[in-house]
Image: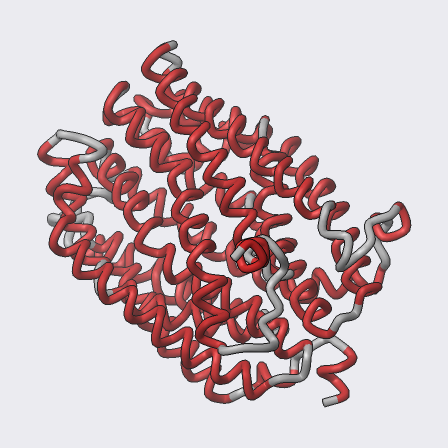
Length: 468
């Protein structure tokens, strides 16, 4: 019993055993961890919405797309490092795994310094460019500036937890995240409700908690030296590994950048509707974050599973795992859609008691609900392709669905619903979410076609996989 318990806290080798059992064992703690991470921003919104008001709630929501845009650097590093770590771990190539981890740590530090300098410089100009409502402008800028000040914690947690998952460890990142989440909730209430610090208090609570989770992840990684070695030699980036990290991670980073840029463009349209729609949008995005968690979880699990098995030259296990992942992911999404349709109003009541905000939010949730099933297919099959080393195909699909589909549809439908001679924002807010639903369905169709074509099967980077 003690041995079985201790095995949960060790790196998981997914190249042996039942694919379904491997995915379930890896996905459950990852799902709990992803939901806990979503609690960071959700608790901020709940506490601020209840203790400060709808304007403060809208301020947090207005800052989201800009922060996400600067996170793309770390998304790219994290995905590239996770794919490389999982494939080298599966192939048992210790030297390559050591150099990958050392390069990742150095790259994360460099990117963090860049964002901490750039973020405060662009905050006010970008928020002004987006026509952020004057009544929330200063609050939104204050929230963002504080988050940029403490960006190092978020950066290292996201990247190093990705490396740990590549090694098959989804338990310890969960433990660290739950610890930080509990701390975040306590600090939120203390700073916002107790000290009356407003949105600034929510931001300070977040960066303190994220810093602790980042430190804990780094300590955990450095204790796993039975699998790799970290020295000054491995910390000094090798050109070949930096190129490989960029080749695998850059497309995923660009995917997130494309999505974030589209969100910023749509945010400009959202801002034009006023504070009530902004507040409703903020709440819906928090609920959306939880609804998306199973999709992102199974997608991440498939990336690690595929990486390890492709690294070991086991394409047969990869395809079996993809089928199992689809069955699990779609099943969970169907259940979630039912819960959203049944309890959407009560979810809104957690954040605000303003009738107009609740009505708008429930309308938006009902529009999005079915799209979560489509996103399940997209995330799982994209996870397989990324794990195999094909990160370009998901990038192009993201570009098509966000730039070519979502943005034009959102602005076009809003224009068609305007009264004669009306300005932007005088139409219906429904196109904001109807456009998102349409882009999700298109993405699922394109991703399925790309997976079935099978070009991802020839993208593995390890010597073992290339020999096979």
